[in-house]
Length: 248
Image (tube, rainbow, N blue to C red):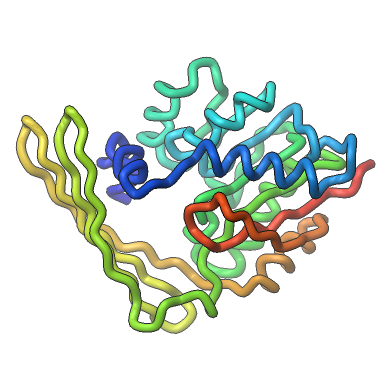
């Protein structure tokens, strides 16, 4: 995964150039929970939060301004290295969302930016949701920003180019998507120019498509009561599936 390893340092500048506002998204998630969860419940006013697939920690940095105890977890060590530079004193863990165990629970667990789309199949989806749900405290919530649902796929696919420039150089990323059965294949080509020279890389992600009902079923099987919610602040218009755990 070139973008999560070799190009981790360029991830933030690239998405900043596209207009993604991680802070606004994080605050909107907490505001949604404050109005959605029962008054006084841990989900409505969380004291602890785990961000699964936290990446470079931009959502986590915003969460930390309102939640006293925040923890991040990601499968890409290079992304966690960037997050450590941003998040002084915040606990960051390396792990696979399908099979992690931090031996504690949180008032809120989040998995944003459609990171759940990197599971391989329905079995992986259920495993990831179950692992995250095991970390949700009584009265808490799991918030998942889904990958595309089948009805949201653009016929013929999408092609785009994104660029960013910093003092360290310039980066360009060309991408395209193609539907193959119930899987959307997303292909990227990266080019980076710095004082050290020019580097290029290609990568491809196989990202299965699940319906809203299938996401909800995964949360329900994990012991959570699911609901689908729209959130205007999200850069990708894919909504959120929120699972509430009953209070003890």
